Image (cartoon, rainbow, N blue to C red; front, side, top):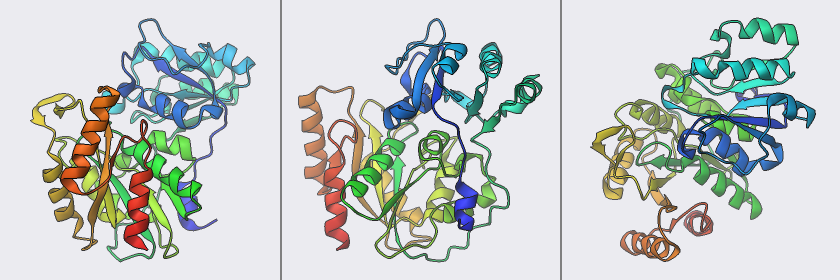
Length: 345
C-alpha cells in the first residue's frame, strides 16, 4: 500500500443502518441519500424519527431490528448546518451501541464528545468512527506539476451535485474501460468509496497538500475525478474550495448547479453566480497551479423542471457555450465523457 493509500483509506463495516433524524428535505440528509443512491447494496434499512420528510426507499428499522437483519454499522446520514450532533438525537446513538453496531459519522462534532458514548462503545466492544477526522501528518502543498489528468467538480453553491457528478463521471469512464478513479473529499464520498480525505476538516495551511496527496502522480492516461467542496462564491466555505483547487491542479472542471437556486442557501443576500462569472473566476484562481485549466461542461440538477423544460434548458446551455450540459442523474454524463475523450486524444 502506498503512502497516499495509507493516508486516505477508511475501514467501515457494512451493511449499514442509515439514520435520518427528523430532516424534512434530502439536501440536509445528503449523506444518507448519497450512500443509498450509489451503494444500495450496503444498506439494510433507515431510521427515521417522527416528522422526518426523507424516505430513501429502505425498510424502516430500529437499531436492534437492523442488527438482527445483519447490519454492522449505524451511519449518521444527516449533514445538517454546521455539522453538529443535536443533543435530542443522541439517544439513538446509545440504542445503536446497545445493538452492537459501530457508529459512523461525518459530523464536525466528534462522536467521542457525546457524553458517555465512548464509555458505552468500549463496554459494548464497538467502534466510534469519525469519518471527518483527517489523517495526521498531512504535508503542505508543493505546487509541483504531477503526471496524469485531473477533473474537479465546482459549484455555484453547496449541495448542487458536485459529488454525484464526480461519481457518475468516474463510473462512466470505468464502464468504458478508461483508467479513472473517484477521489472523495467529503464524508459521504468517503463512505461510498471507502477512502478519501475530508477536506473541510483539514487545517487551512494543509488543504492544498491534502489535495495533492489525494490525487498523486499517476499514469499519463489516468483520470482522477475529484469531488468538489463548497463554492468560490459561498461566503462561508469559499476558502476550502480555493485550497482544494490549488492542490488538485485540475486540467478541467465541470460546473455544477441546481436550477432552482437563485441565492446561496441560508445566505439570501448572496445570489448564485452566472455560469460566465463562475467560469472566469475558476480559471483565474486555478491558473496559479495549472495554467491550462479550462471548463469542460456543465452538470445541472433539473429535478424541479418537467422533462420538456429540462431538455430545453440543457440544450440552451450547450448551444450558448459549445460545451456539454447534462443532468448527471436524469440524463447521465455520457456527453461530458465524450467531450473529454475527444479533447484529450
